Length: 625
Image 1: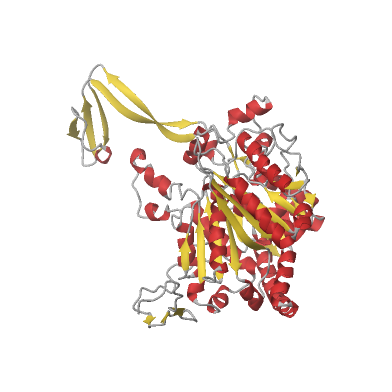
Image 2: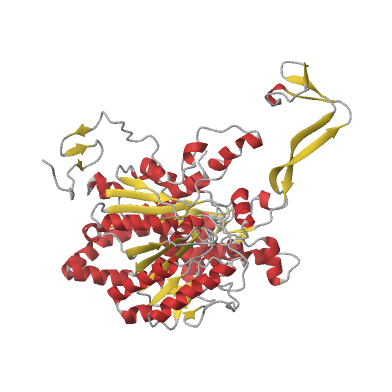
């Protein structure tokens, strides 16, 4: 697993640990806070367990925590957006204005700034090679005048302040989402403890796949956002904006610059369920024997004025006016913004966020052969649409099907008692009034049908906001942390469960819950009827299943091989905690265009790849020969 969101880095469960910080042992709290201070560029390591602050003073770990704890807590998770455009400076824009002149006017301007073609009646007199005088006759003129608009939404789940993923590799005008994808995939490989080249050389190059994307493309200025507004802002479209804006570009970047993969690739978009849709592709590929290794992920960077305004216009976001009305306030403080997202409480809309999350899937035989870590297993992701709808964005019936099927599968694998007593829900939990009612009703009905009486519910958007297509990736990263540390994050903004929440069989809690989980249900309810639920099995359950399939001897051998993997993973995490990130970006390396290949009838050999690509195919259609 790897990535980053508003709580921090995914590897080493850093982001997860930020969400349960107060229940961690003192040493783990210190480790978490010092690593976040490094991530946020507040301190830099100077050897021998010492750190240097921005003022040059040398600090020990405890001094780092004492000095920076409050700053770290206030500048991670959901908070007031720190971009000047969302503060007093305002969001740059234009206002259309109709000017009426009772008599002719004249002005000077640069020749390059003249509109083409010239408006009717305009007369031009050259002053020098660069400057002209323009005479405009009496009448009317439609124009756009620049202005600064005060943001109506000021809260978001932004990456930890000071962390800039594009600074760790040779990024040249990359959209933020793609820089986050490079960082997230590199973090995933580092955390795995496996050498990617060695792993890749074990298999047919066509046995590897990458399914990664996002829900709405790259819409900041370096991507489609800048391209779409270039004419009205008077800017030129660049050669990078069009190609880098595509929604599947995270997969393309990983193939070209991180993994060097020639296997299957692509992305499937499903609004807020996008991560689970791509996870399902990887699971199906491995289960059908088409692939042995699949990297799955998403990277979304939607904290832009235009995207925020689009969601605000839908009345989907918790804007400032709604938050003030919710608590009868006349002014919002930084603390109020930190409480903007309130799943299953009285709430007024979701809080947008950015995140990049990746997981590495492998078939069980390869896991045992390589000594790979087992963080969890995903036997299935269920996907269903809503059927007939009034509003395309309104919730429907599909999520009843996805959760119901997932619980049925978990019961088949684990038994009724395990599901009733040792499973918990990772709710979509957006913090909208509609979601709190509809999603809790789904949970309640499935709980009743399966005899579940006190089902724990996590809703991590309360900490990190809604990262759109990456949301389920955030939930999975949190669930992996629960499997490792034994705590389910609470919902700290849940002062009281809302009256219209179906809570009779559900267990809501503000503080982290100590819980021995066999499985977690990762739930997503996306715009347009994109419903998905993934079943995540704990590593302990997974090992028991592997022993049953492969035998105890094979599992013991795997544990022996895993020792070196764990050492390598721990070394990576220690380096990352100290701010030494091994971001992989291999631009222009090993480029092949076709003539270098050895093309045979049964295989194609590719220079730089240990094994050929087999051309043997299964033919289920019969033959006419």
